[in-house]
Image 1 (cartoon, one colour):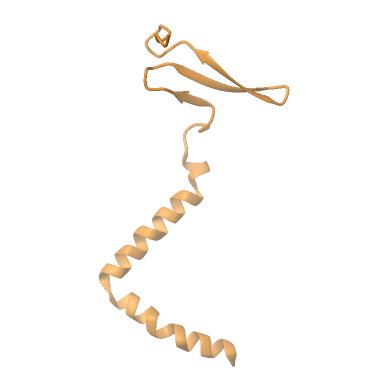
Image 2 (cartoon, helix red, strand yellow):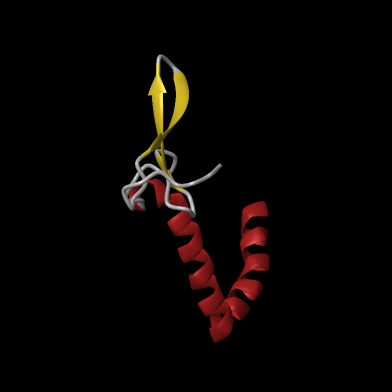
Length: 85
């Protein structure tokens, strides 16, 4: 009894949303953003924390050694270390 009353009360707003074209477009956009957020670990091409390229071109790599996280500066993409001093 309670469930059918809830469904009946939800029918009118749902009909209004389904009947409104702009609301349906917004719903599709919202659901696609939520789906991308949920499936982001499967959609990403690399580990997001393993490589961090800073603006000047230096490359920081993240490694885990003996349970501790270390950030190591590698050669820059241009082939030389940036002048940061």
